[in-house]
Length: 187
Image 1: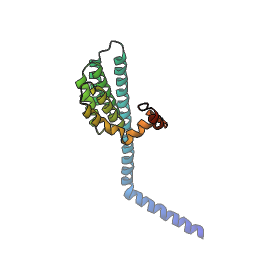
Image 2 (image 1 turned 90 degrees about the horizontal axis):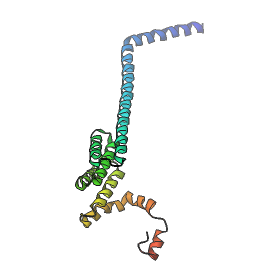
Image 3 (image 1 turned 90 degrees about the vertical axis):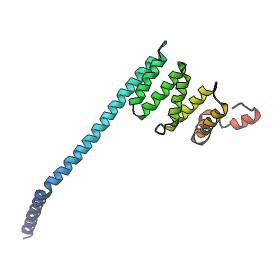
Image 4 (image 1 turned 30 degrees about the vertical axis):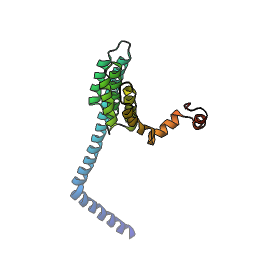
């Protein structure tokens, strides 16, 4: 007798499920297709970004290798790096701008290099370490003709905050304080 009730209950569940599928099946299928299309679109976008970044990386490395060759034209390489920076993702954009500035400085275009380092140092989208590097390079290349007070004011923040921890970690030993007391200027 219990089997009959179970069988009837199972038939009623199946009939309810058919009605639900008939009523909401199209909507459920549409939602599932939308989810699949969204995931496929996201994966396609990630693939396209990775491919674009790989192309920029190859171009960056090729220009960098050509610039490192003896007798290479630094101005032309700097122009190539500026072109890379114009179309590259954020990381390569910053690296290309820094390399272009270095090549400008090597080629004797000090003003252009200083302007480029200034631009990178003020770029909020660039990572802090690269902004700090741009400030150091600006200060280094400004030493000959720049105002010492302005250079010191610009580089002073690098000796404080997170940069201070980096300078302690890499630049000084734990005994440096004791050595400095015995021999000023040793560390």
